[in-house]
Image 1 (cartoon, helix red, strand yellow):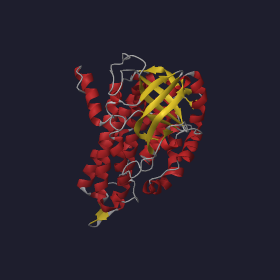
Image 2 (cartoon, rainbow, N blue to C red; image 1 turned 120 degrees about the vertical axis):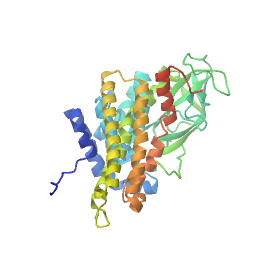
Image 3 (cartoon, one colour; image 1 turned 45 degrees about the vertical axis):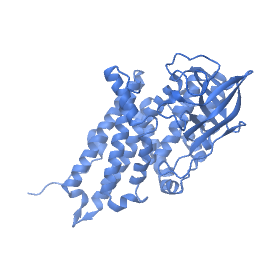
Image 4 (spheres, rainbow, N blue to C red; image 1 turned 60 degrees about the horizontal axis):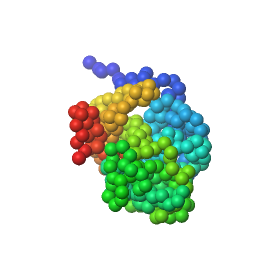
Length: 411
């Protein structure tokens, strides 16, 4: 008895997720997918190998595409749905995590901070130029000794007359060396502890955390690029050094007082990662499916073996479950009801499953999997960073644990 041929399905096609996406959101996604396919994907292996990326050129193209700050309203931003923004992040990271990081830091960290907490003058000065890609922003929160515990930051801002003077160092800052403006978070020394639950830090009187806009070229401010990375090589990563950087009072983000400001920005970026990491996983899985259908082992395709199909089925199951969760979180965000612990659910699941899929796909490609002829090892290496930035997996486990138990276990 002959078995009729079966038309292969895509992993997400198996789940029917397309029916859950509206026509407008789908059109935005398809536009970003086409851009990545035509303009970015042919260059990614070279950029990754060289450890360099034409960030300014890409920013202008992405601005023309309308994805920079796309989920924000006004000031030249597109004002799309959260679903559309998530799907755009998915397509960008299906290209490379570095590309999605450029967009996330620009839109969800730097632009969002100015949009939500800035003065009208600051918004008018920066947001239209950033939305168009004419100006690039970065976000300085993480420090060499304080990543998961930003409350311990040592960067200080002190009053000197009507000015502020900043001293400190930030680390692992995406876009830093090419940014026209840095959103820098510092603990002030002229104000009392601000009721944000952070207390004081070492080396100075307790004070509130405030955000400052530091333009590139400000005396005392530098952003040396970090080289010799094994992950996110197609991305600009920098240190920010502030040595007696003098800023006018107008540089302060007036509506951000305490750690709730930068943490709300991180939640915006984490939301994009929920979709973005799944894009990397999807690209790995689709690449592996194509390879398995063509690669012959002992006179039949690799895809025809039971062990291969079991691996492909398990990976597709996790990708599909992740996508269903991401779309559900998007609907909550569009409704204005998404909570931080729910974003942690998505970030933890997407990054954990994406890196597992990338690693399994690498094994199925054998030796070919370690080359830049295929994107799998590049994605796997990138996901090592995505797994830990914007909150490590352990941090998100504790956020979820706190929501479940009511007990704080960070200390």
